[in-house]
Amino acid sequence: MNEQKLISKIQTAYDEVLEEIPVIIKLPGFQTISSFTDEQKQYLSDLVQNQVNLLIKITLIDQYDQEIEISDPEPENSPFNVEQLSSYKIQRLTFNFNEASVWILLYFQDEIKLIAETETVKTPSKRSI
Image (cartoon, rainbow, N blue to C red):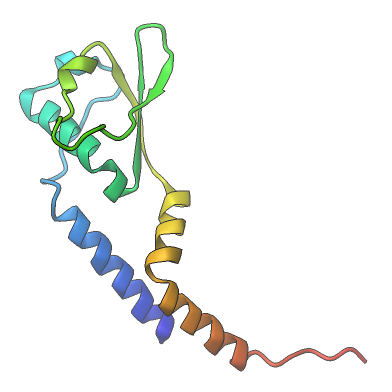
């Protein structure tokens, strides 16, 4: 039962982050960002601004097929300008499972510790004969 409570808390916490992002808009892959509609450009900008919270990684390719990963925008008072990357194409958007695992371990460490202790008590030790 503790596991289910933890899963529910994780879901609720992530849903709260998702509320900041507008409805999902399809972003065409392998098309230059300059060909995106204004709505798609704004959505990409929103994703970049929130990628850390959403635990996603955004990878672009340039005209020479060189990959670049969009890193966090520097100062928060300097918004990301999608026009700076207009000649790039989206190669992939990926959910970062490693960062998500670390986030869960840190954010929910008390709950995880309780589950671990409960499971340790329930599991009988095996004796060698």
